Amino acid sequence: MDDFTRKMAQAFDAAPIGMAVSHHRVLSMCNTSFAEMLGYDRANLLGQSFRILYPSHAEFDRVRDIGLKAMEEQGSYSDERMMRRKDGVPCLLYTSDAADE
Image (tube, rainbow, N blue to C red; front, side, top):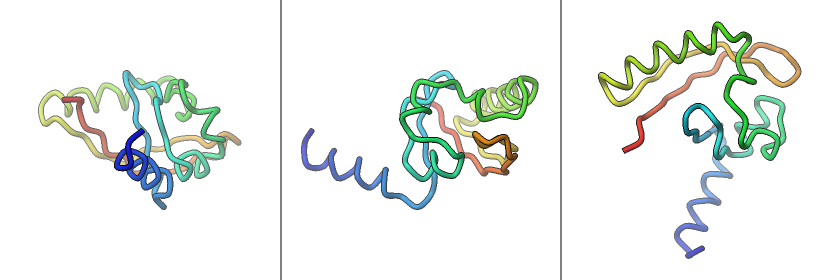
């Protein structure tokens, strides 16, 4: 890993705001803040479907349907959505998604 990439990885992990990267709604990376605010260890989230963070299958599908339409039309999508911490407590998160280029 070159010095720039190492510094970017450190900045990503140290950010005070939760950040995650996914592909087909599966978490490929997240920072410590994201994992902690949802009550998880980061290692336990990686490779998991975002489904585990939603209160129901229906809500997971509903958000997908709304987000896909916006992503196709605008290339990005932002909203506030109810998600669920590991302990089952609901939490409101602001999310922002962008299509892969």
